[in-house]
Length: 316
Length: 272
Image 1 (cartoon, rainbow over the protein chains, first blue to last red):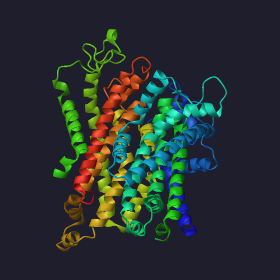
Image 2 (tube, rainbow over the protein chains, first blue to last red):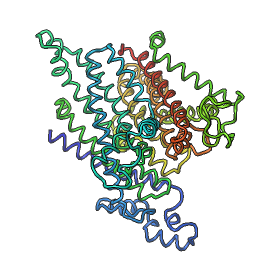
Image 3 (tube, chains in turn purple, yellow):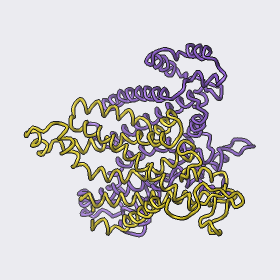
Image 4 (cartoon, rainbow over the protein chains, first blue to last red):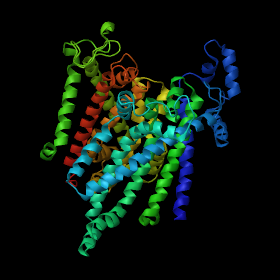
């Protein structure tokens, strides 16, 4: 097991390096040079050249990358052009908001998703199964940014039950109940697609498991049908479920962009959209890097989880 | 074919897709208000008001007309970006699967690194670099989806390239390129079509999303995503400017997904 984890860790380091290279290259694809953007249209060519030199932008790309990576490793992501603050602090602040949203959505997606999938598989062809099929087909097709606005129209504007914008009430103390109330609609919106996917995967792998020989044996031994389903079959669907939850967690992190935009949730996604529209490249770079790093770590975690659940993976 | 038609979901999907394609093709020949024609005195008319079957937006533009013209944009971007991703992914996948060994290792590790980014984030980062706009967004979404195609196709090719027919082709002196194009490619068309049909809906959603947050199609293009973005400011007074274009995206994507599922079931003999 520890050898497997060591191998995965080594590979993660390689992927993370690759992620930094790619982030760096993508940001250097941009037309127009940062110095003239920083200085604005009134700057003389001499001023631009001078700033380029100060920023190290006149050096070869590889040298620039190494210097930049050195800063990144030490936690220095540069300064935001529009906010005039260090990128790291800003990105970190925004990232916490995204994590809250993602965690909320995960809680909403996982429980009901697994439950519905198991029930649908247990009573295949029943009303609840058909309900799950319709719901998942809709869930994977509905655009989150539209679904979010529908929720705002219904619950915030018509019924006035829940707030539809921001993370806290504008005036007032930032209390936990206030946060939770603001979290409900965005979290439900973000949870839509992952809930559908989790339901689908749980249902399929549970149906598969219920066809297994050990299930027939258990039934032949006279084990109660409820125990057959939940003790025998369900255990064997865990690998599939953990895998899909890991994948969906990655989707949640990035998919949060649209939801944050709709609900003005002050997370990394909303920050990225604004940074792109104002061409604040250090901020974009920092945000992209942080989200991608988290994503790689989540994948590592889910790899380790299912190696733990399924011995065939660690010894294979 | 029979199995495909017996699937009610797939049949519904096929009909909806045909209707949307037909509407998109006929847009220039039908007499209706041009999608950009404004009528400020009649802005935000509700659906079913005279002259506006689905209402008008904040500039008094006819939503029916904008929907129909927007269908052209949505279908085009969906097909073009999925096609681009498919072709690039197929080239990488076939080469990796066929040569195996070191080439495969190198290509797949590069794909792994690309997959170190969540797909939506990669698309957004690429748009950030290229600059907002419909063409750039299309390119970005295509590139972000290449890894999935490359991986899937490589897996299929890897299974096939050990097959007798590849051996036989090599024995009669076929070149590598000929084996890849004439022997391997035809054998993976079915899974590719299925994957493509399941992916187009996602591409359309993603493009609409990028347009919605201002990174894709730019106003005044009649695009479903920009229609949603335009409407967002007016949901307090006229919800239909948001419900109508969103419903169009939802129904089209649902139809495409059901169609893709149907194709998959019909082409994959294992699933019952």
